[in-house]
Figure 1 (tube, rainbow, N blue to C red):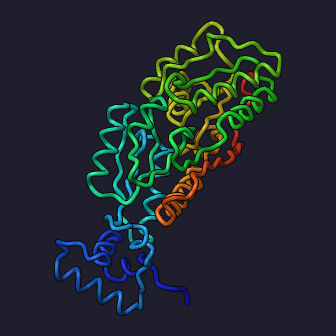
Figure 2: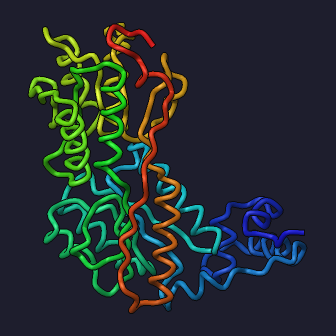
Figure 3: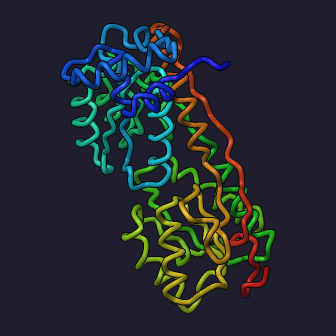
Length: 335
C-alpha cells in the first residue's frame, strides 16, 4: 500500500488540508474537538508527517509567500494553485499576494510577507532590475518566476518567450496570413517585449513588413484590450489573424470576435485560458506550462532553503504550440 498522505488525513478527519497542516505543526487556536479528530485520523492511517516542512522552515513559520501580478490572470491563478498544492503536501501553508503591476505595491507586499515570517518567497517581479533588486529581501530565500531578472542574484524560472512567439506567428504565416495583429503591453514587461520580438522576427523572416496599425502595445487587462482590439478588427485594413501576447488579451480578442460576429480571424494566444477548447473554433495557444513552472519554482525554493549558499540557478523551460483550430484558419476563415 502507498504511504498515507496529508490529503488522506484531511479526507478521513473531514477537515481541510490547511487545518491538518496546523495540527501537524502545533499551530495555536485549533479547536480541541478538531485537534482530536485530526490526531485520531493520523493514528488510524498511520500517517507520518513529512519532516521536510520543518527542515524547509529553517526556524521560520512553515509558510511560503507567493507574489504574482494578479490571480485574475489565468496563468498566475493556475501557477499559484500548483505551488499551494506542493506546499500543503509537505505541511506548509501559502500566503498569496498580488502587485497589480505596481512597483511600490511589489515592495509593500514583499515586506508584508517577510514580516509575517514566511520561510521563503516565490515572486513574479514588476519594474526595472534596480527596483526589483531593492524590493527583494537579502535574508530570505527567493525564487523569481516568469521574468528574466538574472541580475538580482536569485534563483529563477521562466519560459522561452521569444521562440514561443516566433513559432506562433510562423504558424499563422504558414497558413497564408500576411496581416497579423499583435496585442499586449510591451513597455513594462520584458516577457512581452520578448514576445513582440518573436512576432517581429517571424514577419521579417517571411519578408512581411510590420504594420504599426496592426500593433497594439498599450493593453494588459481584458478591459483595456477590448476597445483597442475592436477598433483593430473593424478598421479598413483589418488583420486576418491576431497574435495575443497574454491570456487576458486573448480573451479580449475572443470577446471582440463574438460581439462582431466574426469567425474568420485566425488567433493564437500566448498562454492557455479557461474554456479555450469550448470556443468556436477551439483556441490555439502557446502553452506556458504553468504547472511545470510552479513545480520548478517550488523545487528551486526547496533547494535554496536546504542549501542557502548554493549558486543561483536560472531555469528556462520550453513552450509548446497547442493546435486546436483557431490558429489553423486561413484568410477568409477556411480551415
